[in-house]
Length: 477
Ligand code: FAD
Image (cartoon, rainbow, N blue to C red; front, side, top):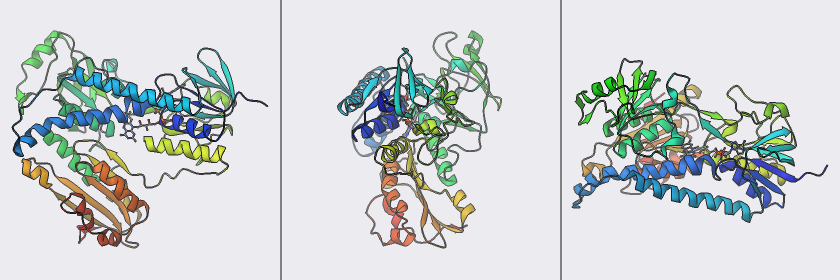
């Protein structure tokens, strides 16, 4: 049977764009449908705009630092509309690059929503039908709002980059990396940030000591973090709520409750710990769901899991042999470089005749909280469950912050197998921890032992030198 295309990719995000380009480079006839903006979550409303906001927010502490280092600077104020304009120009530029790359690779672009009609046919929302030998679903995910009354008054990470005004106060609900990163960003931009997380500590799943230090650092910088706390009720604030809020005593130099300017424009919230407050904005970062609704997947025979994710094997193939899925929609590891690798492994398998499973083991990653976190491998808690380990850990004030009179501490930690001496986990809380873990990650991925780390001469004076100078374990477990 003759198909219109060898490959039809649904979704122009990190995974879809890479797979389409690399497949086209093999000589395959490829098409891609994107319903919103080319570049997907990472470029338009994820990694890229978020990191630019991390950079923007970091300047607030630098005025004090600069003065400590002898500079005569006066504090300015943050101009959100100016930054937002610049940000969106940059995102437009990046989107243009993605589109050009696809065009240049000979990929046919459909600016439309697509769904499956059958294992070889895609239907576009303008009614067109296109056939393909292979279909790759790379539709990513979206934030989900909790099912509580009044939730529609809140926003998600999707909305944060488009706000008309910076709120004076915000309540962020959630304890994952997105919630915690935005708590730091907005706090740095001068917003009074309160964060509620229903669990006992933020950043579930990561190393316990690192989580503790990050939470402490966030609090020291001004985030009002409440653990074991959830929202039980929310509604538009009334005039009475607003006047109550205005009368609330000051806490740490900022009003403990900040009402928004106009009557009725704030959001009144009641928490499980009894706190009642009015916030300018409430942001939910309580989880993400795979974009599989209304995609015709089940009808085409594709298995969808309990959380809406597409079920695939190690080659990203679904139960339907012609249909593959990669990236966040499969809910394996939700990171851009992983979606890209899955896309490339798919092309290797299907278009280059070289079956390539995706290696999801020992993936380094960064959390751009303030303080920043870089991590690879097993946390101390997880490693202990597997085998006896030695823990090497050092926490100190780095010289740049000590000189500036800041209280920020860094932490360098290695989790080492007692039996093999291999470094099973490396966890860094420090400025530029993301950059450091990319490099330390190579050693860990190669199976380096603690002695390999020790054989490496320190780079002095740096924070990272601590990784090769920790002589004695702080404990065994
Ligand atoms: P996506 O990039 O989400 O792309 C899917 C695309 O499919 C979207 O453009 C969507 O519009 C389109 N689409 C959906 N349904 C259809 C349809 N039916 N028809 C046509 N098109 C459709 N990862 C990191 O590695 N580092 C980070 O620092 C980081 N920060 C993040 C911060 C935030 C706030 C968020 C939300 C995510 C972050 N991520 C980060 C995760 C990263 O963005 C995702 O893992 C990555 O974008 C997944 O790529 P993908 O190709 O699977 O999906």
